[in-house]
Structures are given as C-alpha cells and as structure tokens.
Length: 281
Image (tube, rainbow, N blue to C red; front, top):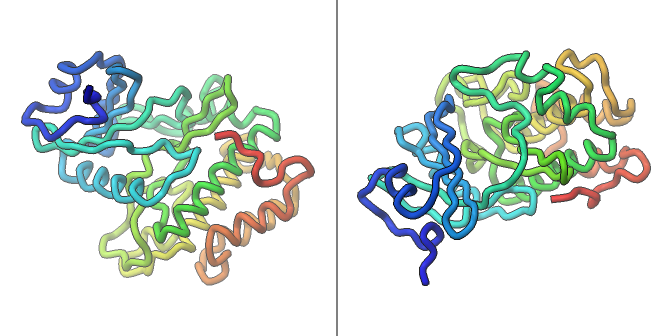
C-alpha cells in the first residue's frame, strides 16, 4: 500500500487541506519570519512537513531539497520526500522530539527568549560539559559533510538546533539557506543572525566561500560553550578559545580553510574524554 505522505504525488489541494485529508495535523508552525509554514502530522507515523507558500520560502525550500539530496548525517533531520500541493513545494521528514534552542518568530524574538532561566538555550548552557561537547561535536561533524559536498552555511544560528533534553541528543533543522559555494554576494546581505554571521555575508560583492562556514561554526562554539549571551562565562579551555579566535577572524584568509581543519583543531585541544566520535545523534 502506498504511504499517504512518503508516496504523495503533486496535488491541486492546498497543503493544509491535503494534510488534513490524509492524517491528523497536531502542530502548526505558521509564525516564522521566513514565511514558511510547517506542520506536525500523524499519518502512519509522525512526520514533520514543511511548505514554502511564498516566493522567498519556496526558493529556500528548494535549496533545502538540493542540500538534503547530497548530504546525509545522523544529526541532520533528513528530507525523505518532496511534492507540491496547490503549486506549493512540500518536504516531508521524520518528526524529532526536542526543543529548538532559540525559537524566534514574527511576534517573539530577542535576548530574553534566549537568556530566561527556563529557556531551552539557558538550560542547554547549564548541561554538564560532556553533554555540551557531544552536541558541538555532532554539529561540527555534520558540517564536515556539508562542507565536503560543496555547500556553505547560510542563516545558521541556535534556532537550527533542536535538542532532546531527556535523550541528550541533538538534531539539526532548517538548513534551508545553505547553498553551493563559492559565489559572489549580489545583495546587501544574506539571511542570518548577526550573532553568528561572518562579515562577508553582509557585504555586497563579497566572495562567499567555505571559510564563512568556519566562521559561523566558530561562533557556535563560542556561544554554546558559554554560560550566557554576554560571552563572559566561557566554560571551555584557553586552548579551545584560541581555536575559536582563529575560526572567527574577520579576514577569511586568516581562518581555518575548511570545516575539517576546524574540526581537527578543535579535536586536538578537546579535554580528555571529549574527543570526536562521542556525539549522540
């Protein structure tokens, strides 16, 4: 028997109507600044369905489809199937349990969402160091594959990290703006958080290369291995901080040349018992 989602074909129905016709929509994410609308759907399993109802979100979703066609990693929530509903692109992947570390929406964003004691990001930052290192290792390892496949990270930030606290497991989501590199930036800036973006991602005419991914991962290490947003409570070592400093230099030529170099440098200074390969995905 065909699966109602994994074997779905293009349909003239709009996405929400189609999903209600084949299963139960238990969650709707409709307040995203990207314009994308996503759903949690029970239909012979539990699925995460994402749609691109406007031109910008449709383009992002097509970029995501391209990335997922070339990259598979245990920590990356995969795209298993694609089709269109009412002319809108739709992707289907498995539903993963967890909390997004920073779930900004059109109506809710800002520092308080990250720093409140009950927020997912604050709770993540308070985890034992081995759990934080395992999550960071998964993030770096997944980006080694992304980098090797020829893609550069764009619009990556803590909102792309879904963390399952009971299982101590990290999942990477919403990698929708990743694209093949290098390319010349032909607009004022790429999408992204200023807390993570390399300077060349906001300079028209700049050459965007894999060194940009190195920068955003360096910022990830800096922000997630700190106890707070002010970057005054570093939980790592001075040797690790030196790796972060090189990864986040303004001049791309002064950073590690690719993600594998960053990964190896980070692994070389990892505290005992926190070496690569310990991640749980």
